[in-house]
Image (cartoon, rainbow, N blue to C red; front, top):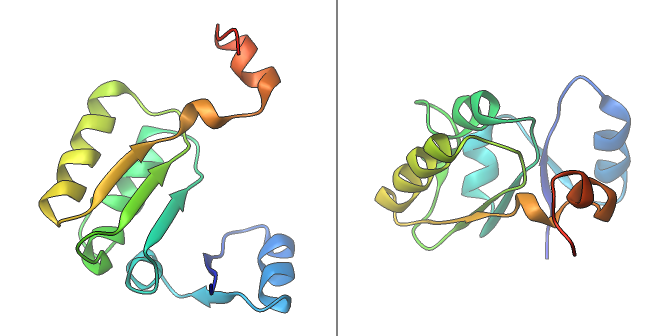
Amino acid sequence: MPLTVLGHRNRQPVDDLVGRGAVEAKNAAEVARRSDLVFLCVTGSPQVESRGVRQGRLLEGLAEGAIVADSSTPSPNSTLKVAAAIAAKGGRFVDTRWCARPRRRRRAGSRS
């Protein structure tokens, strides 16, 4: 299955993935157009919203039935807003923030 990535300031991991066969997209809409499953790995609500629900971003290229998994730590209100916008485009939203490293889960109060 092909991997599409969106670059950022730290080029080393992006260049490594491209060297292994991944395709680098020019923007978030292109990532969505090329993907059935999109993982968002950003800091929090402002970043998720700016990359996802604002015009010209991820939603623009999202296909019906696509899944967007958010592993950031957004606010509950933001999560609901983003999930609704994705659902309106026919996509599905998954909040995956509790899939973090075990040490991080313990700090957040989880016992698993």
